[in-house]
Image (cartoon, rainbow over the protein chains, first blue to last red):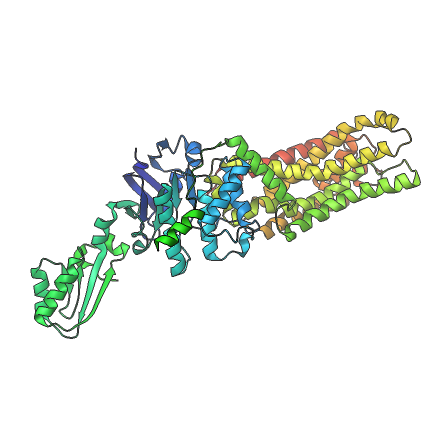
Length: 305
Length: 294
């Protein structure tokens, strides 16, 4: 059974097609859901929860028709919204307990699971503090804890790393990964930063302007997006020729160019060719295309980030 | 490295799936009502959240308790009348609604908590009804509570409590009915006005202004006259409306000099006005939650 199965899903706001005939079958696992800001990610998640009605088309989640069985479905989904969603004058443990109860858990079970989930996200020490006194990082964590409190089968995480510093991002992604792998809960995690979530995902779903751009394994997608930036102290046209002769895709001038990274053998090819020609390498850097560039321009014209 | 992990494993029991009971929608609603009722009194919240409800509760219970104290010490049997007390409570109740109706709904909107509620198995109209019921129950405590204190006080300080009860028990019906309608009237107006804004300060201001401005406007009309129609203006002043309603309910004559006395309207006019305004306020409130964009 597909986790999410959308058929020709369309959502039109006045003047904007947020989703444009999206048809896709998503299998369980950790699914990275990428797209630029405004690509339609949040709209899609909110349709999955029945918070928004699609203009046309249909979607099934966990085998439930969203239009018809949304209440049964919601009992099995955990949702972490992108924006603020926390009451500031409650303690962490009271808040998560309350949310678990709203999802139907008896008080004692709700209390126990709240404690467990707060420990899981690393807020055990702070659980009796008022949420208003939490830092941004702690607020993101408690948002994750409440989404897990009722033991959902599917988690929808909307930009969970938003507003976090690099360290906080790493920790949040590690939590997401652990939740998906060890807990066996299917996770859909959105991000406008591909580089960030590709490491923790099993598969990727990419949309742009409400249209499906890619759906499949992470590797195949990231190959399209990685480039090796090469800079030389001198013009060495022979190096570019030599690399092209090895079947690599090279763009740029003879002193500064980038190569589309098909796999790590590109490094070897550059090393060998540069050594042969004694080319004065000054910089090697793995960069990536922006999501927008990947979608909107043909590969040949892509510039590096 | 493996040692560390092994040591950690002792404490880390791993993720436990939940296989226990999951109650349905009516349970979720009960939870939300109980939670909102507690929030109306600041229970489980910080100190600041308790100030307003505690103050109002103290003020509505105080006259009843003092009266009983004085009456039992001095042996008086004449006590403050239920109708007067209801009228007095209504003013404080309006303040309570101005402070606590926004507490119950505006904070959820302002901080986005509503999106979490609605991603769980409840509907937006369920949410709205739960809030109405919770605030109504909270205001009921403040209206019915002191009235029952007065009722019990009258009986227990009487020389013959049983005889006093036999004389007094029929009053329980107007006590209950009056508390019920006055509570629902003020709670629903508070919620309806609060639902129109997403800022708590504005919501509180809106509720207070509603009670003040309608009263002021009604007084002006009564003072300058409106071709004989000005006597109906008492229906537009919440304080006089409740006063007229309470008078009719407990079957007491309005003082001649008072606006209600001068207007000399049939008592049912007050009842119907309150019912219509309450229904209208609930309709407005529910409409705001019929379709919520979160």
